[in-house]
Length: 126
Image 1: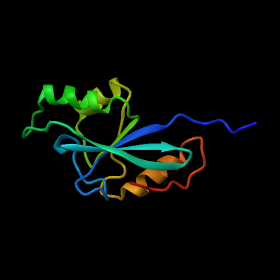
Image 2 (image 1 turned 120 degrees about the vertical axis):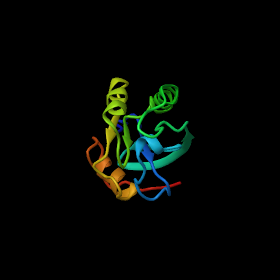
Image 3 (image 1 turned 90 degrees about the vertical axis):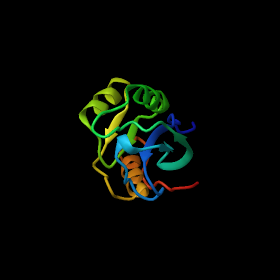
C-alpha cells in the first residue's frame, strides 16, 4: 500500500530580497508563492500586484486584485499588516502570519512544514 499523498499547500511571502520576510503587506508589489508538500517547499512563482497602501489608507481596487491573486494560498507571510487587510484575507480563507517578521523565509517555511501532516525537514529550491 502506497503512502497517502497530501495535497500541496501554497503560501505567499512579502519580501524585498527573497531571503527574509521583510515587507509590510500594504507595501508589497510582488508576492513570492511557495508550494509545501511532504515536508518540502518550492518556489513556484512571483506574482505582481498593485500597491495597496496609499499613505494611511488603502486602495480598494488594489485590495480586490490582491485577494484574487492570493486566493489559492493558505497563508501569507508579512512583516506587518493592518486589521482591515487581516479581516479581508481571513474572509477568503487566507491566514496572515507576521510572527516570522524579519526572519528568513526558509526558517518560516520549515517551521510551517513541521506543523503539517508530513514530516518536517523542508528544503528550499528555486
